Amino acid sequence: MLIKGEAIRTARLRKRLSQRELAHGICAQATVCLIEKYDQNVAWDIINGLCQRLEIPAESVMSQPDDVLRRQLDRALAAFMAEDIVGCQRLLIPLADLIEADQLRAHYYTLQGLVALAGGPRLDEARFRFSQALNEGAAGPHDLFRLLAQLGFGYTYFRQQALAQAGYYILAARDGISQWPSGQSWELEMQLFVLLAHAELLCAQGHWRQARLIAADGLERLNASNSMFIMERLIFVRARAALGAGDTEQGRCELESALFIAKVRRHPHMEARINALLQTLDQSDRETE
Image 1 (cartoon, rainbow, N blue to C red):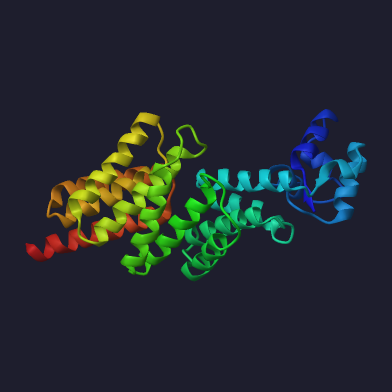
Image 2 (image 1 turned 45 degrees about the vertical axis):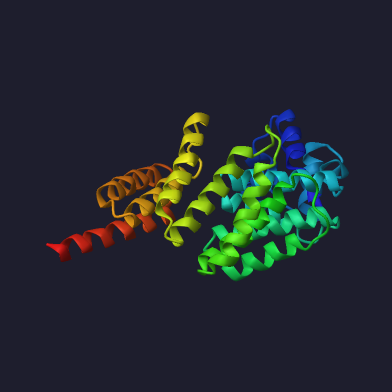
């Protein structure tokens, strides 16, 4: 059973209670925070106690219909697109045993795959989840989650150097996004994900010039939208392509830019990848001297 956190928050503010005051003697303040922010599922006695203090019926804050589940999945997707992987995972936890509709299960499996891919990555788990999503029922027109599952499935192959399989799924996702009507939700983010994956694939295949062009295309789209979404990743790929083409000076400059942005955006995983490549360049320079 899902808890409608917004309903709890609205009733609390109407009573002019802080989270601490609402929680006192019932649960921890952090529990109220999780309920309001992530629709956290909790024990019945906690919900009943909170609702009694708020003087609202407990039934008014609980719901299971598909439209509520769909909103919860959309919130989880929004958290992922904001690069809040922990938040995405928290939103998914209460849904595990609730989703019955085929399409919603496919969306749930896709998000679980994305979390597994981003958090580690756990490649086998991610591929299993994406496979579940792609085999779960019929996809609707311009199904964002199906495209994400295709792309994620291809990326698991890429990370394991199975480039032919990776290319099949990544290019299928790129074809899918190219057929989207303009103005779709998450259109920019999906275009950038596809461009990044394609550019990384081209780097791995040694097609340096094409990889640089595709990464540059992504960066132009970011500039036009005044966004920094996955910017350091696109610059990192462009740096790798420059290095692969023998342009060491340009590659190092791009790496320094990517490192600065990764630090600003607090992405330690990307900082580590960029620093590792810079250290390799430094070592190569010392050996040349």
